Image (cartoon, rainbow, N blue to C red; front, side):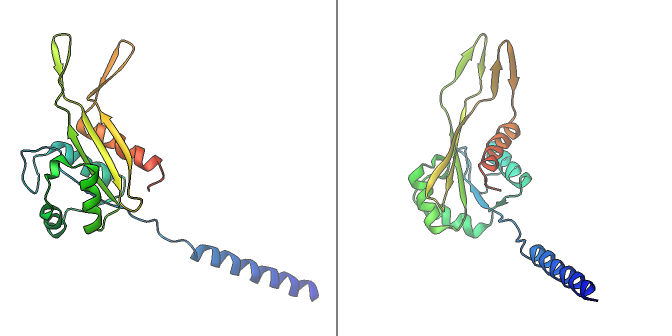
Length: 174
């Protein structure tokens, strides 16, 4: 009888431990991100900005919440700067008025590289600003092609955006 009591106590205690361990699981934090326009000759809602649209798709694919509501953009556009020419100081100013985790911005370089008989597209610089740390966590230069020995690999906008977002995820932001 005494062995049965000990066995039932151990079984009861192990069930309580298992149930309490399962209840402590919290859902993962979903980071919010606002993506500034990359092209200068666009007006809100920046529908023709293919680079921005590629970043929106890449962030959605990795489970981030992309802020695209009109009220947030009204606040951003009220600041006195050109959103397509965002700098780190501008991102810091936006972070003080808009509640997001990341601000993605960048510019297209005006340099045109010539290789052989053709011109390669302009490289794109991308920066990701962490509003909670008030720091630039990623500054990346995206090229449309990459050379490994004699082989060239060409990238689309979606490929380049996904590489940057994967880098952010590998840093632990997921």
